[in-house]
Image (cartoon, rainbow, N blue to C red; front, side, top):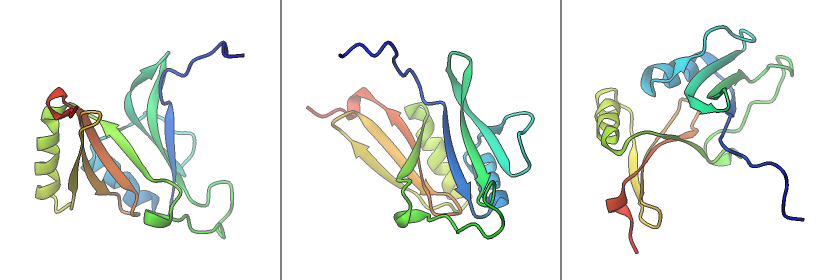
Length: 146
């Protein structure tokens, strides 16, 4: 049977369990520029608006304190290369990537740029305070290679 009766139309949420919620919150708010959603489910969770999303569900990034629901002796989440999270990619217009690179440079944030010609994307990669890779990605037809 190939007709499921449903079709995914967008990404609703990415959630990251954090060792240092305050540092991660400051990075995604002050460096990446995401706005916090008003209200909150808990002091141990911070929700950021990524984009409008689909069907009334705002696309969000949720940061969870590592101990939420597990207690203070919860194991430290793996980050960086050992994490099961490879990276998160946030879309923006191609022209704004240059501004992002200038912003990173002005704030001493290291980054690297990669081109993905097979699909016409350029990614500007950096890391959040816990070593997770964050990509600001954009499409440009001139980047597509046959």
